[in-house]
Amino acid sequence: MPSIFTYAFFQNALLGAVLTSILCGLVGTYVVTRRLVIAGGGMAHASLGGVGIGAFFGFSPLLGATLFALGSGLGIDWLSRRRTVREDSAVAMIWTLGMSIGILFAYLAPGFMTDLPAYLFGDILSIAHADLVGMGILTLTTLLFFLLLERSIVAVAYDRDFAFTQGLPVRTLERLLTALTALTIVGCLRMVGIVMVISLLSIPQLTAALFVHTFRRTALLSMGIGLADCVGGLTLSYLLNVPSGAAIIVVSVMVYFAAGTIKRLVARYFR
Image (cartoon, rainbow, N blue to C red; front, top):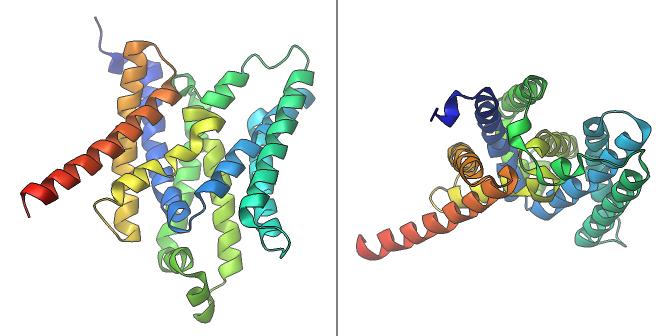
């Protein structure tokens, strides 16, 4: 029986996992540090509106998802800065509105969307060369952005008020990082889908935070953990013939609890 690593589709999936782990390692560390996980979830689910509209009007659903994710991120930010709307309420409003629009247009689309489950739950094994090129460009751009502006990003992530006092362009940085978060969410839809994409931006970081406590170390370690989660989930998906997105998330949660257990055991018996 040939090794699964010899198949072209699995090699594409592995390369996608590498790019995704780098991308989510960087952006996810900012999202977790800045406590934007719920807002990120709202952006991800709202992007379904763009998928449905794209299918209805005959243009790329991923383009529609990108526009909706960007718009929802800016919309959540705008609503939450109004005195009359709390951030969690703004997220709930945008989250449900985007999903409702997506479902309505998906049902109205000619012939219905037969590939809707792929957008909802992901299918990394179907990643094509064009997807890898786009993800590679986004990953390289994000990596350069974080390398050039690391100190400013860290300042905004940990204490935006302090960053203001240092004369940093906080609002501009926040908008750029919101845009990167939206693009990352859309770039990872092929991996785990709209429903679970926020997990890639949070669970590896939570696992890494069990062992390290600085922004850079958390980002680097979460890249490795995210890659291990993806490879483990891919292998499990292939062997059990189950959806790859769900398998990746299950593996990542298991890794988190295993890491926490190991840390407690080491602290108990080797202190």
